[in-house]
Image (cartoon, rainbow, N blue to C red; front, side, top):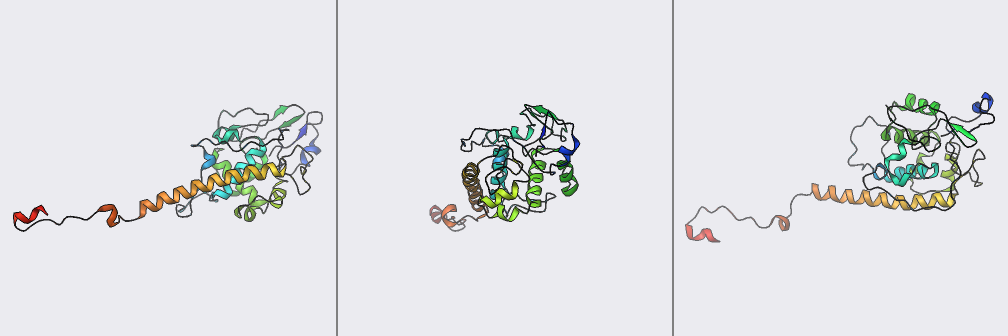
Length: 251
């Protein structure tokens, strides 16, 4: 959610005030899309099964469909980093935060632009303050950032489309005012900034969703096998305790 302020006019308060609270900016990137490369232990593969989700202080359960969109936002915002958790430390311009205890709230100047955006979803400081007030997350760690991004998705009334599990132009357009790297229905940025093509986002989303659903299914299969009682075939026939004559105890 990087608020764009040209270095030539970064002192003009009116420009800053005109940018909606969730707007993000991502510098221009290559037009080709790389398939998701995911570190197996990374949070980018972390999902919650309905049968596993008990009482929680977190407002949002992260399903494969929601995680796929979160990963796609990171891809669009330039914080994917091969699916590694390193992406949660990225500040505008590509530098890394030393700590995830709080939002760094530090303006970075890069090329013609300046922004205080930080994290996997490039939260602006005032956007992050809204997240904290609204859902009560603590710190600025990966879990808090994921929950904050889902709050912003819900705030844009895009959560039902997210849960449908299909990347549509309508879904991208709903998120375009929040993340400027997402295209409107016209295919351009909501703020006239560099933008990812919808076809790039859709392709990335489909591949990562397929991976996440496979992870979900494997976990379900494992949980199911662990919860089943042993079958007769598994346990084999049990030999009764022999209490009769000794000659019968060999059978």
